[in-house]
Every structure is written in C-alpha cells, then in structure tokens.
Image 1 (cartoon, helix red, strand yellow):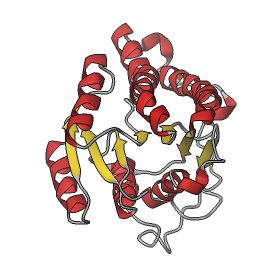
Image 2: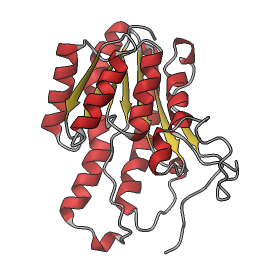
Image 3: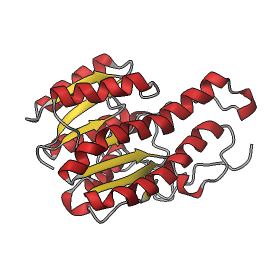
Length: 254
C-alpha cells in the first residue's frame, strides 16, 4: 500500500482516526476529513506527517452534496487521485426515539449522511480507480446490518445502513473486473475512549456483555480495514464483516 492515497471520512477522532493511523503505518498518504473537530484533525495531521507520509485535513459534511464534491476536488488537487476510500462518517441520533417522532429534516439528514453521501463519494472516485485497475472502498455498517432486522428507535439510521449493505454487494460485483474491492465493516459496541485505544490498551479489562469477554478497541476495526486494503486481499469483496466480539447489541423490542 506504500504511496497509495487514502481518504477516511470522519477521521479526526474515534475509529476513523485509528484507521488513518493504521493506513499511514502502511505508507499511505492520508486525507483526513472532519466537520467540527478542526483542532483534533490538525493534531492528527501532525502525528501522521511525522510518520514520513503526506497528510491533509479537509473540512466537509458528508450529508451535503456540494461539500462532498469540494472534498474530493481538494484531495485530488493536494494529494492526488484517491486509491482507498473509507466511508466512516455517518450522522447518528443518540436519543432513543420512535420513527413517528423524527422530524422530516432529521430523516433527510440521516439518509443523506449514511447512504447517499457514501454512494456519491464512491461514484466520484471510481473513474480513476478503474483507470488504475486498483481500488479499495470500505463502508461502515452496524453489527448484524446484513440481516436487515428491525431496530426500534433507530429506524432511519438502520434503514440507511441496510440500504448500504445491498449497495456494497452490488458495487462489489460491478467493479470487480476493474480490480476494485468493496466491503463493509460492522463494528460492535465500541464505546467512548475505547474507539482510540489499541488491543494492548484494553488487555485485561473484562466486559461481561461481550462473549469474547473483553471490550472492543479502535485497533480491532482499523486492522480489519487495513487488511482489506492490502494488494493480496483482492479476492475479498462484497463482504459484510461483523467485528463485534460475538456481541449482538440490537434489541428487537421497544
């Protein structure tokens, strides 16, 4: 992957940050993306640049089409054409609320940010990936997204991500002849500061809810994404990969 250009959306903090660091360790040049976390993005940019690769930080809201186009244009101008796209960013309403209580604006924001935004980003990077006969696209889902089950209080978010499941599988088939792989990574219930921790950081911590017995870490997700981006991972495409320690966090009843 040395010399490849990777764009990771929503990468100033959390799982996106850990993914950016992991890909930088493989020699990728990194395009960070943020909406509000400018200071965190600039600190991470310095940390990644110190690894000996190029890195830029670009502000853009993935739920707004015009900002998606500006994001890709900026990356292409400052770094070059995108080889690896990690669609990590996606709005989420933390308050538990039935669908009838969502505003129309919230519905549109969640669908735009979690389904249409990644689709448009994918479409923008595909021509150059096709020309190079190489590309890696990663979508983010949620644990058990591939089963399209009900998720009360998360109706819109779940529907958008489940739509992205079908799109992931379809795009993988369509782009396979061009050397482009498309996969979805579905993190388990990785909470708070654990999103920026390594596996060693959480060693010895007990999590009785997770069958594996320990909490998940950001490294658990980043290492899977990094593996999917390797040259010899080209036979892995169209997969919906749960990285959850065996935990099923969805409660099917209200």
